[in-house]
Every structure is written in structure tokens, then in C-alpha cells.
Length: 117
Image (cartoon, rainbow, N blue to C red; front, side, top):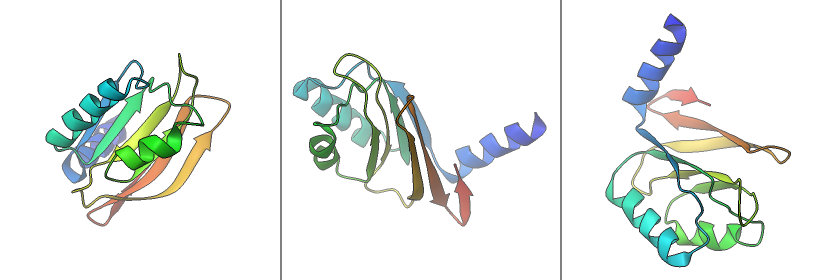
């Protein structure tokens, strides 16, 4: 347990993260509002759940977010997750892993000479 708390402390110090259930982003007005909200509150990483992103919307949504973004698709009514990196963040990412049978996405994140998954 102490190791987990120490790891979470390092993640908090090294990179600021926000996790949010957006309850669907198919509406372009809602999606734009969510992106504006995220951009105005500086965190390095945003983990979004229930995006309802589909295979035919991934490219558009990646273009609309001004920083790096990684998407796991769902349906127009459920599932879908994403990891967004703020465009002004110094955090970098590598080794994207997507489990297409479930609602899981993972990413190696690099910040200040440390790597987290």
C-alpha cells in the first residue's frame, strides 16, 4: 500500500492529471465546450470516460483537440475512453496499448525523467 501511495504522490508531483466521465461527446457543441473547459484548466493529462467515440469520429476528434490525443472507440451510446495531453504540457507519451475487446487504454507517460503507465 505504501508503494502505491508513493507512486501516486510522484504522479501528482510530476504530472497533473484530471479524470472525467463526459457522458458522451457526439454533440459538437458539447464536445467544443468540454475541450474549452479542459484547455482553460491546465493539467498535463486528461483521462475521459464514456466519450461515445466511434471509429468514424476518431480522426475528427483528434483534429479538434490541439494536443496529442489517444482514443479507444465505443458506440454512439456507450463506452469509449481517451487520454488527452494539454498542448502546453511538457509531458510526452509512448507505447499506446488499446484493448479493443474492453474499454481500456494505456499509455506510457514521460515527465521530468520519470515514466508512468
